[in-house]
Structures are given as C-alpha cells and as structure tokens.
Image (cartoon, rainbow, N blue to C red; front, side, top):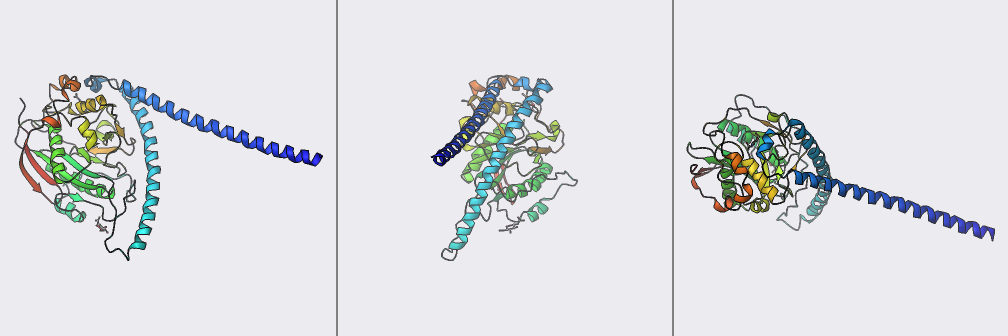
Amino acid sequence: MAADAAVNFNFLHKTCKVVVLLCVLHIFVTLFFYMRSSDSSIAFVQNQQQNPRFFASNNRSSPSEQTAAVNGERASESRGDEERRAGGEEGQQSQAQAVVKESENKQQEPERKLGKCPETSPLLVGPLRVEFTHPSPTLELVKKENPNLSSGGRFKPPDCLALQKVALIIPFRKREEHLKYWLYYLHPILQRQQLDYGVYVINQDGDYTFNRAKLLNIGYTEALKDYDYECFVFSDVDLIPMDDRNTYKCFSQPRHLSVSMDKFGFRLPYNQYFGGVSSMSKEQFLKINGFPNNYWGWGGEDDDIYNRLASKGMSISRASGEIGKCRMIRHQRDQKNDDNPQRFDRIAHTRDTMHKDGINSLTYRVVKTERLELFTQITVDVGTPP
Ligand SMILES: *[C@@H]1O[C@H](CO)[C@@H](O)[C@H](O)[C@H]1NC(C)=O
Ligand SMILES: *[C@@H]1O[C@H](CO)[C@@H](O)[C@H](O)[C@H]1NC(C)=O
C-alpha cells in the first residue's frame, strides 16, 4: 500500500513539474509576442508622426532630432536584416538540395533546368574598398573585367534563376567620367548579387534645365519595352555602394539604398530622405503614379516621391547604416541644374497633384537608343520648363 502511494505521489510530482514547465514556457512565448507587437505599434506611431504634409522643413530641422530618428530606424532595420539573413540560409539549404536532385536527374535530362537562386547570394563579400582614382577606369578595362555581360549591359546568373528582374535607371547628362566609375564598381557587385539585370542610362538631350524625376519615369517606361522587369533601381550616377550586402533589388516596401552617404557624414540627412539611390517594384511605382514630371532643376523631387508613397500608406525600408554606406564622387553642381525655386511650393501639394502628374501624364521623345556593351543609352528630349 505504502509503495503504491509512493509511486502515485511520484507520478503526481512529475506531472506537476511538466505542467509548471509548460506554464512558464507559455508565459515566455506570450511575453515575446507581446513585446514584438508593442514594438511594431510604437514603430507605427512614429511612422504616423513622420507623415507631415510639408517636408521642406526637414531640410532645416534640428540635427539632434534627426539623429534620434535615424537611430530608431536603424535599430528596427538591422533586426529586419537579421530576419532576412536567417531566411536566406534556409533558402541556401533548399538550393543545395535542389542542386543535388538536379545532378541526379542530369543524365536523363540534357536540357538543364535552373533552380532558384538563394535569398542571399553566396557570392557576396561584404564591405568594399571604393576609391575614385585618377585617371578613371577605362571602358575597355570594365569590359575586360566583366566578360559575362551581354549587349546593352544585361546579365543573368549562369547557374541559377534570379529572384528578381531588375532595371537600373540612371538619369544622366555629361557625366561620362562618373559613369565609368559607376560601371566599374557596380557591374561586379550586381553580378555577385545574382540579379537578372539591365543598365539604362537615360541621357537628357540638349542644354535646357535638368529634370531628374522625369528621366526616371522615362527609364521605367523604356526599360519595360525591353523586358518584363519587376523591380526598378533609380540611381544617381555618382553614388557607389560600399558593401555588396546592400542588394540592389526590391522589398515589400520602397527601398532607400543610399542610407549613409559620406557626403552627409555617413548618416541619413533626415528620416524621410529618399534621394540618391532607391528601388521600387512595378506595383509600388504604379501605386504612386510614378514620379513627378514638373520638377525642373535641383532638389525637391525626392521629397515629392516620399510624399507620394507616404500618402499611399507605404514606408521606406533600409539596410542598416553600416551595410548602407556609400560614397559620392565629388563634383561641382552641373550647369543648367540650379536650385528649383518652386520646389517648396510643389512638395506642399503633392497629394493634390500626384494623380494628375506622373507616369500617366508622361510625354517625351526618344532621340536615340544605343545598345552598348556595358549599358543601354537612351537619349531623350524631355521638353522645357513651362
Ligand atoms: C563568367 O561566368 C563563368 C561561368 O559561366 C564563371 O566561371 C566566371 O567566373 C565568370 N567570370 C567573371 C569574371 O565573373
Ligand atoms: C533637401 O535636401 C536633400 C539632400 O541634399 C535633397 O535631396 C532634397 O531634394 C532637398 N529638398 C528640398 C525641398 O530642397
């Protein structure tokens, strides 16, 4: 009898232990999810506060405010990056499995079917040395170092199916020197990122005032005539990333790629900054009716684009400040690209004008299309300011 009771007690004791353990586990899991959701609701509140109607004031806001905002954003973003990286490893494993299966089937199937590229390319090397040596690298050298490109500056990874088809759009006028550095640095990076990509230099014809955003709209339109691109990277010609983990592709939110530029002391000038290098999927681009066509001269068009995406409930995604480092080639302001005095007035009215002014109202004339070895150059007449 006594032995029986002891066994019973023992059993009860163990069961209790298990129940208590389960309870503790449950509390931890609940806490974890609670923390995460409160975290993201804080981020949401911040986002809402960052949606004022007039962004012009951002160029004048106090530096301490800006730094605080930047740090907050960085922290949340690097977490995102870790998640993505973790996801990438899984991708790599299944990729490896796919390769094994493929080689088994090889004998029966002479037509090799490519498996998908992994979420994170195994070819990436991380931080890069970027220097603007004189003289600049010649186009011959760039061609020699990138033998796998095809006509028009196109590339596809040879051994896997790229996850995204990316058109790189560069607004351009008389910056041949800068373009050489861009091609020299970017082609190898983009190939290591395993993208199916094409480079489009949109060259504004004539000497009238420069119109960056309109050139970007034109690049979007012209690239789509070539191939069913699903992602568009809009890059100034003078910006070079310093880390190839900053992938030039699209994300679930519009992506700002030139996160910490040397020009701004490797910091974001302000949280809503969307200038320099950015990417948008076709869907994101169409949701905001593309970019404005009526910003002539320097400044403001990037803030207008930010207003467009904020008004459609989108937010900016970014890599961490470390991975998002980039260098700008020093130069003097181009001729015929003076400050646009109307820019403050225009960005105050983005919400009213964006549905009339954009990809749906774009007019231009193609003067010349050239398929060069390292890029496609499209020279266009964008018209003149009214
Ligand atoms: C070109 O592609 C081949 C595989 O098709 C590869 O082995 C080679 O390393 C590539 N060359 C460069 C410079 O990327
Ligand atoms: C504010 O400054 C940034 C960075 O130089 C620039 O890209 C943006 O266009 C400016 N905005 C206005 C309204 O001038």
